[in-house]
Structures are given as structure tokens and as C-alpha cells.
Image 1: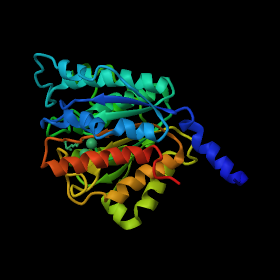
Image 2: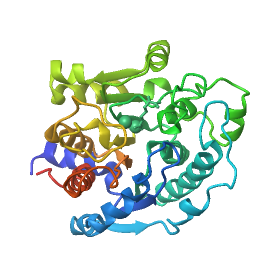
Image 3: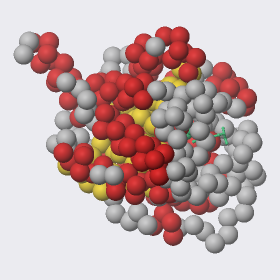
Image 4: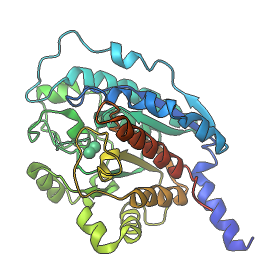
Length: 325
Ligand SMILES: NC(=[NH2+])NCCC[C@H](N)C(=O)O
Ligand SMILES: [Mn+2]
Ligand SMILES: [Mn+2]
């Protein structure tokens, strides 16, 4: 081993050396969007063998207890808050997620959260930033998920998590009251997107206004995934020293690769492009938290389900370094 190899390995293990344990939070939650089934995402990934696979890579696995709690915490009455649907339920669930993720991070484990719809990222990022205030965020998605309570057309909170986390919501409204436990915890220049191709007009305005860096599928076509990931990391993590939280929505992948998801959009990342992102993030050694969300086993035939669950598990393993030599 040369000196620079040794240095590189020391660098890489800066965060992963603490994370010999993967702290898994399963979130069987579908309240952020209208389609049932996404709450079965975690159990299907576990049934597929994800825990054994991670242990087989040499990690310890620590799974948060009480995954059924998410199903039973739905309030009896949850009338719309402005346009927002299930706002109280989403808020309670995300708050619980934030406590579980925070506990995993505080122990030095890498916090892996299995969704569930993407509204749970309000919790994962609130939890991870409480422990790593200087972390940066890679958001891999077809969608920008940055609608505010005012800009959302659908009222589905899985399209809104980032506006709460960045503090972009209109202040002093009933919506901000329901989510008053979320403090702005991510700066606009600490967030970068890859994979976007279905962004609402209100979201485009927010991205422009706050100068948020985004690499759309157009950019992936133009530059290639290698260059895009390098530019994305350079933007938020120039010297590869900041902790990274990667929030991966499986709909970033093309529907031919990950069909069982609630809001599929044509023209997405190929199998290899998705995995390349995960490998490049693993290579930085900076990953402290990862979300894998929006796997919906109820959508499509058994083969679509198997394919989507398998690809979700494989993205997780690659993010933990499986395919690095
Ligand atoms: N996490 C997701 N799949 N989000 C889809 C959001 C779609 C749309 N932009 C909305 O706000 O309703
Ligand atoms: Mn999406
Ligand atoms: Mn999403």
C-alpha cells in the first residue's frame, strides 16, 4: 500500500469507521400521499433479506423498535390544513422518525431509513442535522419535493418536505403551527439534487430564488453521470470532509428499472446511473445517513414488485460500499 493509498483509506473511514453499525429505522408510512401500499416498503425490503445482506458485508445492524407504531398513530380526525392532507399524522410520524434517526446518529451509527413515502424525510433530516449540523444533502429524485403549503397543488406532503427543512414555508400559518417542531436545519447551498424531471412551476421559482443547485436528467444526458456526481459533490462538499445525508427516492430511477412506485416519471436514471451515484457517495466515506423511500409493493405485478424491492436493496448496499474494490 502506498502512502497515498493509506491516506485515502484513512480519509474514507473518517465517518464510516464510526459507522460499523447501521442503525435502521423502518417507517411503514403512507400518509404523505394518497396511494396505499408504500407503507409495506420497509417490510418487503427486510423480507428480501436486506438485514442479512448488510450483516454479510461486515456491519452490525441495529433496528429501531416499534415499527407498527406508525400505523397506529394516525389521529381520529385530521381535517385538511389549508391544502395539506393528513398534516397532523405526517407531523407526528416525522417527529418520531426524527427521534429514531437522531438516536442512531448520536450513537455513531449510519442511520438508514426505509420508507414509506418521502414526507418522512422531514424526520430523517431533522434527526441527522441535530447530530451533524454541518451536513450536506444529496436528494436523488424525479421530483424536487420543495412545495410550500401555499405552492402545493396536490396537498400531498411527500411533495413538500424540503420547504419545511429549509425554512421556506410562509410564516405563521396553521401549517407551520402543525409542524412547529421542525426548525430550519438545511441551508439552500447545502442541498443538491440529481435526477429531476418533473418539477412544479412554483418549485422552479423556489429553486431559482434560493439558488438551489439541481442536476436534471438533461444534465445527466449532457455530462454523463460521473461528471454530474462530481459536480454535485463539489457544490456541497468541495473537499469531501462534510457529513453527507443522501435521500434516495426510488422514482429517480426510470420506471423500467423501478416500476413499483407511486409517482413514476419516464426518462429516469438507468440501473447503472442510480448505482453509480451510490458508489460515488460510498467512496467519499462521508455518508452518515441514507433514506430509501417510495417503494410501493402494491403497485404493479409481482415481477415489478420484486424488481423494485431488489433494486432498492441493491442501492442501499452500494451506498455502504458493496461494489467498491
Ligand atoms: N416524493 C414524491 N414522489 N413526490 C412527488 C411530488 C409530486 C408533486 N410535485 C406534488 O407536490 O404533489
Ligand atoms: Mn419522487
Ligand atoms: Mn421524493
